Length: 402
Image (cartoon, rainbow, N blue to C red; front, side):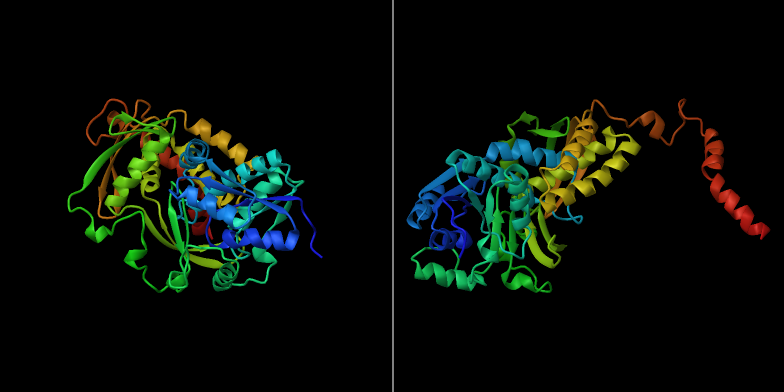
């Protein structure tokens, strides 16, 4: 016999999986179900989502606007870190999960709930991201993961269950893509994408126009940063939320931000996903370029190592950990002088930095010039090379002697 609960807070999207979970939880645990839908910029019809949750048996449905917090507390740290998973994935789904799960915990506390539930499958990464947040913030609350315990084994089974219980869902068997979207990106998985040889269909894309159909003339824009945080577009200071929205539209028009990747999931398997991160792609590349003139060599190189680890932490769901907090402190120190502007050119799917300037620039024309200068004595290079190459010289002499 399953353990009985008084009240369960469910992370609710209104999609197929969470739609059938509400009646399933009530049938199997005899509990009150409170749904929570997080608005992280996915532009869903939240009124309809609330109505569906209540019609499916939820006693309440919280609709929580998290867009501002998502930008300032999660996306900006991600930009400052430079984290990219496996050189391609800009972590759009990963970075939203700790925020959504945190809000779910807060509602559970306010409601006096004794369990948390989510609709993540037992094959994916999201189950880890949600549950590690639960463990970090509410270790006393039980966790229910229906996909790991119920008899439903496929999306087709879930659709059949929904039909039997009168729960309307937005997915049909003719449109099998699994999608997650928010202010930062949209992901596409499943369906014909499960064969990594299949070319993504153009009508699958949502946020970006085809690069082949993009404008024939390039467009140049200027992104301004203060201490690593994006603050302006073409000289106009903008709140973070508005800045990301405008960049999404600009990049989408030029087909910028598409990624097709076979990635290594945390749970051990490889999976194929297609991601669209239009505005985020511009911001990542602009930020990296600004760091090239504002960070000294050793800090810049070490930060690249930190970015790799940071990406793993975010992808693995380890947002609320001591190491993540410590890396944030390091990153914030590195961003003290990452202030300035970067000129970006958008053209048929490409996004390229074509100019950069900063009051803290370490680039010196006097030193870099190929002409004569009074600062750098080229004859000093001989002694430097002799000392730098000393280990090679000793090794070569030893080989000659032998």
